[in-house]
Amino acid sequence: MQETRLFTTAQIKRYFDKLSKKGRGCNKLYKGIDKLNPNREPCEKEIFVERTLKKWFSGKYVILFQEDKITGVEYKKYIFISSIRYGMGYKDDFNVSYLDYNAPYKMWNEVNIPHNDALRLEGIWCEDGKLHTTLLEMMKLNIPEKEFTYDAYDWDKYQSRGRGTKEQKEAKIKTTVTVLAKTQKEAYKKLDILSKESRLHIVY
Image 1 (cartoon, rainbow, N blue to C red):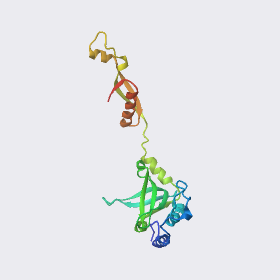
Image 2: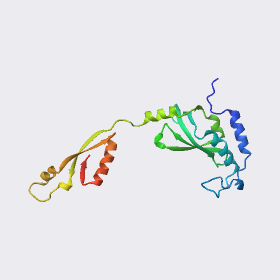
Image 3: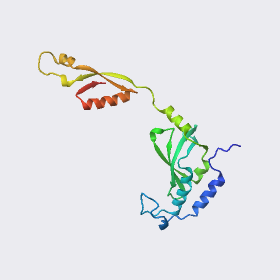
Image 4: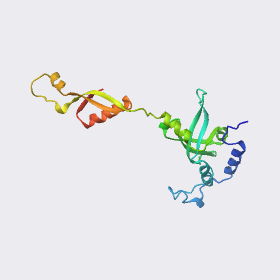
């Protein structure tokens, strides 16, 4: 039978058994090991996870087999593991920082994985991130830019005095503005900036 779980039951049990024997209290032996907080004294569990899980899996690519809790739809989740640290919860667990290629707009994510969740992890380990990069490229909005043209009024050229009605004077300062953008939403953003930087009244 083809195994889809990322870890076997024996592997999970062996690791958590070792972790459970490590101390949870602050340990002076490890003072200074945290370069960002040199006065902190990490516990033995933190150091154990740092020297094992973090060392083994940080920088790894994996395709997780997931199921949506609401719809029940099963799908593949492409992730890059950035870092792993001890969760510091009531029970032994891990805090995993990762990049979700299925939702790159969310950028970095975190999830806590306790013993039972670790047992249920299913997926495929990837040697590199080629599949992840391909997925990301497919999701990018890489359509070409096009011209968006709008009517505008250049109030720097408006003359309040002189002959002519208000409508006639406004007709003389009427012009058009063209911006390059991929979408109309992007065009609106550029027009907003243009309006703030000039006395143009753009109609859109």
